[in-house]
Each structure stands twice: as structure tokens, then as C-alpha cells.
Image 1 (cartoon, one colour):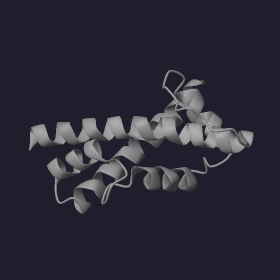
Image 2: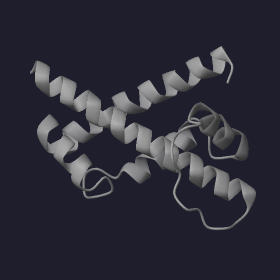
Image 3: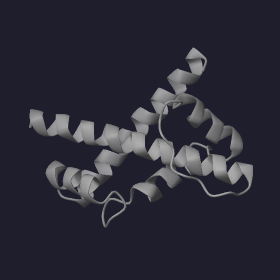
Length: 119
């Protein structure tokens, strides 16, 4: 991955984490409940990680084969789930969403933990 692409990906991730943690803390009335919910059920009530990743992919125009490849190239060492067969684009987008979702979850947990330790 070229340096400019890495910079763009890092900006995307930073933006996604900031927006996600802000929504989580508002919906869950604080950092502790947000972190607890994210850890216990990332797609549960008030968290909705998969929906958020879908919205981010739509907003940043990543819901296509080129966008999926951009995300996957930025995350070459992240594990992927067993994927069902399908059209190449659909499989790649699903893989990219999964990899991004796992990274977003980890970074948001890290952000919430840091924020709680400074509060």
C-alpha cells in the first residue's frame, strides 16, 4: 500500500472511531455502559456495529470492489471469517466489512478505555 493510501485509510479509521464512540456514549449514557455493550454484544441494542460499518462504507464510497480492495490492502494480517461463495464483489465487500468492523471495534474499545482512565 502506498503511503498516501495508508494516510487515507488511517484518516478513515480515525474518523469512524471518533464518530462511533460519540454515538455509543450518547446512546448508552456514558463510557462505561458503551464499553460494556460493545464488548458483550457488538450488534446489540444501542451498539449496532454492523449497521454502523455499513453506513461508513456507504458514506466513504467503499461498497464496491475497489473500496473493498482498498480496505483489505490496509489490513493484510487481519483474520477473516469463513466466507460463503458468491459474486466476487459481494464476497470482497463482506470480507472488507468484517475486517474493518473488527478493527473499528478494537480501536473504539481502546478509545473508550483511555477516555475513562482520564475522567
